[in-house]
Structure formats: structure tokens, C-alpha cells
View 1 (cartoon, helix red, strand yellow):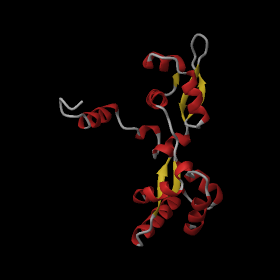
View 2 (tube, rainbow, N blue to C red):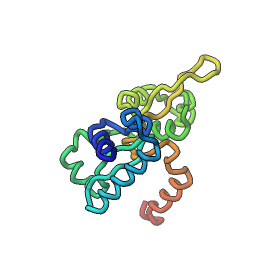
View 3 (cartoon, rainbow, N blue to C red):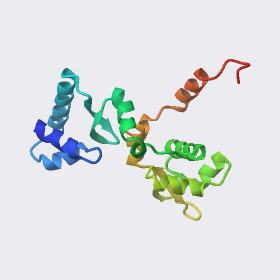
Length: 180
């Protein structure tokens, strides 16, 4: 079972859920699958492998350890980089923290029109339409995608840093007075 799970994770294009693995390994319980994943990670760790199995975007995926990222980026520079403007990052942050959110609510927070930026984020598969708000005009609601979670290395949107953590981090990055 452990070898089969390893093979499934190796060939998968994205994270595999425990349910997805269980559909292939019909006789296995979720507990047995998690135990096998933990065993595989222990084996990788013992032999100091650059590979690990991580929980990300609601599933499990084989990944290289963070310390190898600079080498991988060098090799796949164009394929691994998504370039976003400041306005796109700002809009993406609003969607991530306020989801589900309408374009009007985003524009109220940002103070500027956002339809072009939202369209770009949808094209890059970082944002999706996740319904319609039950209010006058039934505006479209936006939320983040599984690709967003994968790109930012999150298990779920709940793993986003709190706004307080971001504020503390920004305070630590401020220049001393007179050096601005």
C-alpha cells in the first residue's frame, strides 16, 4: 500500500485527497493511508532525501524541500514564476481574506475599479467565481482557487497569516526614522 501511495503521489498533477487515494486503494482506511504517508516521510527524512510529502490545498503532494528551491527556480525560471502587479496582489489579498467577496466590496476597500485585475487573477487561475450574493442585482462572489493555495504553499485559506501577524512583520521591516 505504501509503495502504491508513493507512486500515486509521484504521478499526480496536484494534491491528492485521502478520499481520492482511498478510491484507488479500496480496502484502506483513512488512518492507514495517513500512517503510510507518515512512514514515507520518515523514510525520506532518514535518508536525507530532498523529497517530502506535504499537506497542501486540502490534499497531499510530493514536493522538494524548501532548501532546494533556488536550484529548481534557476532550472524552471519562466515556468514557476507568476508575475503580479501591486494592484493584482492587493486585490488577491482582499479576495483571500474577505472571501467570498463581490467586486463592489473589493472596489470599496481599494477605492478603484477592479474588473481588469479580477479578470487577470481568474486567467492565472488564482481566483474563481464561487457563486452569487443573495442581494439586489445578485453580484458575483469571488474566492481563491486550489492553485492559489498551491502557489502560496497553504493547506487551506485558514493558514493565511492573521492581519495582526502581517502588521507586526511590517513594523519589523520599517526603516529607522530619517532613513525613509
